[in-house]
Image (cartoon, rainbow, N blue to C red; front, side):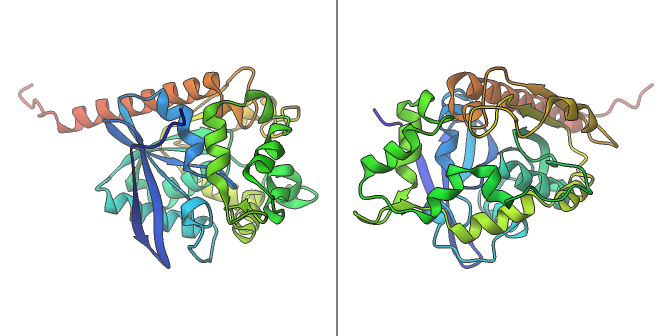
Length: 309
């Protein structure tokens, strides 16, 4: 049976409404931000592993059921949408988890609104992809994403054809499950024979240009001071080396006042670290630890002080 979120809602943002799903729960609310061409259903397997946490998972502007939201796109627009979501749901300060491009949006939220973020969980994204003076990769974001970007200019005659496109994807096809199929099906919009991805190609390109702007992402990351857990996939978007984050670069991410715990989730690629059972379990464990740490700090800050000594 296809798993479905328990509840969806529309939040008023600039230009229209943002579609948001409440996944799993009941319990502490965590803001979950998906990747550059994904939707909230990227979090299905993680939500299943979080029976005591509620993921607030939006379809970002230009994707899913938020596809009708107009530009401008980019991190600033996404952060404004997330703040509106937090205000609408009375989330004063929360743990934020982001996958891929969603990690960069989560980092921007923590940098620009530190009072709203208690901890970050970054899943194969969010940390700068290169040194400050490194040029963007040849071919830009299209070269990084491969088939995931190419499909945005394509149409498909049927739902089965769209599934077939993903079944031969080297990172997605081998882990095909009902959850993956639900994620793929939700992305498809339009009518046969011109079905297409819900993701706006313009949104992908604007957001992607910011992802590969190493100087800008480094500057934003330099402003983050909240404790951060970074989970790395050892294989890339096509289930092969190189990964997005080479292992030798991990030691450079702990600096300043930010506390970064970086670790590799074995035998995962950029997609299976979120949609595969083992990867989702590791992400869920990191979220649970972040929520538990937040609760401990909240208890300590609210406890009465003993000034008798």
